[in-house]
Length: 197
Image 1 (cartoon, rainbow, N blue to C red):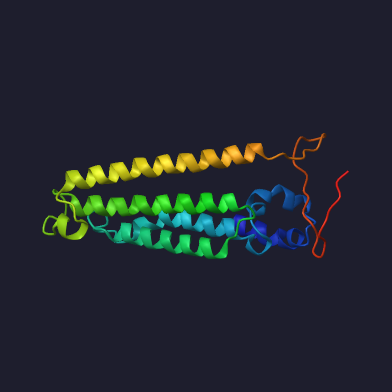
Image 2: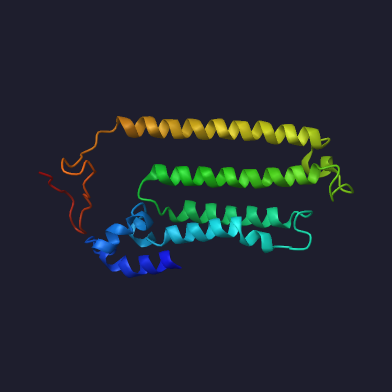
């Protein structure tokens, strides 16, 4: 709520591209997003809060023995990934790709939990056949599949991050002598070029 109120208070100065002192202090909330999406950090925080806290209130009595929590978590994550890919709130495309990839990994972790839960021979789904729902003969094979997929996705994620680091470090940047930081070179509406002396 506090983050939302802060962004609400500084939105005019951010959109006019003349950030106030408070806007500069709260830049970590809006700096990475395009102007229409300065509230996106709050949306992302709500998603994280739901997946880490509110999902425990789903089916409180039998939540650990049932799949409903995992299914709700997959649904929320897939909905967020869809909205993220369609709205494209980030200024930089590599931030968008990284956010989409991490959310995809999260969905894959939840679905892996569903597979393991379905194939758990000592759990609540003994009546149901693991082979019927997953095509795997038993819990050992399901665990091996989930492990191999997890390692594969981890390697792919590390490679993507390494490629982003390599391409980002190769790009030259302008830095201010006084602070060592990159200058804010955002163009005003209607301008195409900017001079920097």
